[in-house]
Image (cartoon, rainbow, N blue to C red; front, side):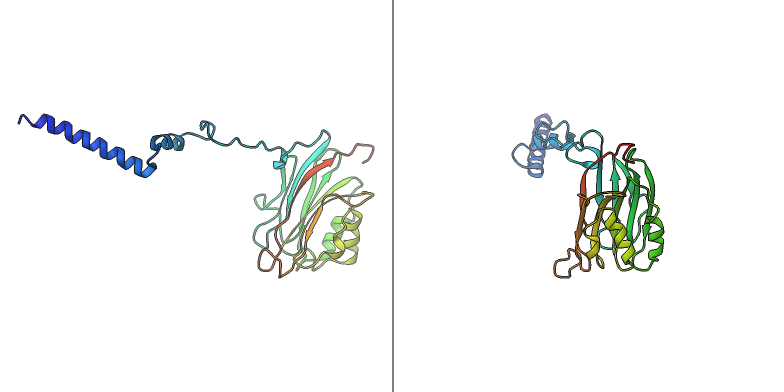
Length: 230
């Protein structure tokens, strides 16, 4: 009976010691409790956490100058992930908004105000190219035209459609082919080629996906037009 108290103390000490060893083994023998504290802390509370890089409109790494629109365009990935068009932190087209589709995805924007005018998608595999022509022909002077491909942008493309895109500033439209990846920011009335265009050719030897090239991502700053230019 006299040994009950000392034995109880020994049992408690052994239990604490074993618990300490177990914790050290699970969290790392060196600085186990420091690691635990870091796991419980938020990144802002962790003094060793890397500082988060600041992102600007549409996720650009640098801010655009005054009187410029920030944009980011991502083409579709194969026939699985739809494209995305962002302008000044506003998503104009995306799968989440449920306004994209196979073929060409086009957003028309007022070049002075940045106001979204209209969005449409045109099936260039099984659709009617005349629907695309009816959409492109009436575009007003100064309108910004954002284009992102998804799956196949060119099977139904005809000469008139290519001429219209060329007039909007595209230099790749003449060679755009089956399942190519393509993004463009053009404008009605542009007097030179657009600086915002990318194209990757569908090539079975270099495709990222089995039957499609890699998706394209393009970002930048578009000068805002003045009312006199509109």
